[in-house]
Length: 209
Image (cartoon, rainbow, N blue to C red):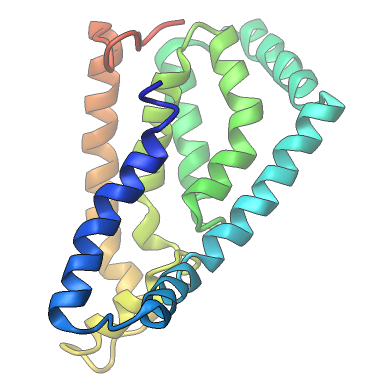
């Protein structure tokens, strides 16, 4: 019951302080002001709503056609036949995600495309969905700053140009490349160490499936 009503609880917890703040600062004088503020907030979510709709269609196509299951089973059989499991499989998976991240900026859209295929493959080869997502986040986070398609890339350039008027896409990427590789290496070592130790990621979230 608590989880079923969690959305309503979150709405109330955030709405009451917001309403009080608006009334005290007089930025909200009537219901029209409240609606305007909510409309502006939702306008910022428009990109995510569009991506969520497209991702929902993508997942529905996979579910109805069973293409995801077919590709997953075929891919898992192939990887098992060449004895690609454990750490080599995880490293290949993380490299693949890092490269894909350069061309698909949205983490949620990328996960919606990859998860229906890659999660079953990893489960078939003994890696839990929780650890698959953890490995995904390592590569997805490390190469974000190298992708011009990232949502906030233009904002980062705008901030950087306050300190260096000549900085552009190429120079920003070249500056951030050592940091990206260092983060990727450090987080990969941490993830592989976690895998070797077999430590759970949380309650009921083992590393191996």
